[in-house]
Amino acid sequence: DVVMTQSPLSLSVTLGQPASISCRSSQSLVYSDGNTYLSWFQQRPGQSPRRLISKVSNRDSGVPDRFSGSGSGTDFTLKISGVESEDVGVYYCMQGTHWPRTFGQGTNVEIK
Amino acid sequence: DVQLLESGGGLVQPGGSLRLSCAASGFSFTSYSMTWVRQAPGKGLEWVSVISGNGATTYYADSVKGRFTISRDNSKNTLYLQMNNLRAEDTAVYYCAKGSSGPDYWGQGTLVTVSS
Image 1: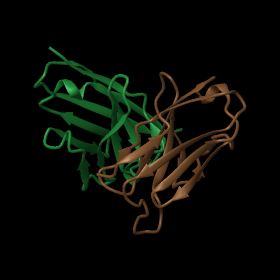
Image 2: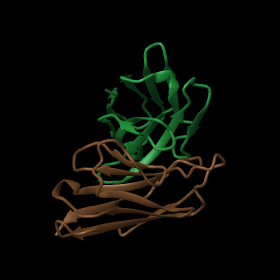
Image 3: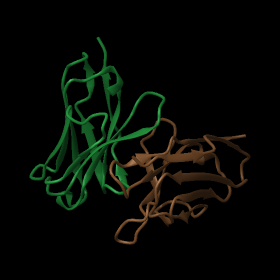
Image 4: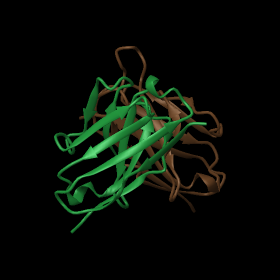
């Protein structure tokens, strides 16, 4: 199975400051069709997960532009340009290239 | 609007069975693979299973293979997860989600508790 490793697992950020979460996969996530199926999800306390980013860097409709995704191959990053209070929650990366699909452990983002 | 509504969760004894349902609306159900993901209390997300749009192809996590069966009824726009021989470690909120490679819509989840 592809292991997804996130770091850090916990992040305490001052309002308005940037935040960055790393996600590394144990195998390349480039699929035979040329796409890289790496997604980012946000799970606010008490809520269902919500997809923020698909295929490394494609922001979903309604997702604020302070969220951005980047990376390639096995190394990926989610950045929040200026953390707001509504960004508190757990963030997961997920690979959708290989079977079985796998998630990272999650990164808990809190406000300092 | 896309809506996914899970049901069927509850308390079941170890070794028992439960069938979860997920009623979908707001999109062309037959055109999309559907996924089940679970989350044990206080833990992270765990991918469980996926089924293709026509139901012909399925995949399972090793942790549930041979015990869980995913299926769908495209005439009813409904996704199912038949769970047999349940164990304490299957206790979790079960989410259905639209799509396979990076599900874009998720339901609110249904809680399954396996305990004597």
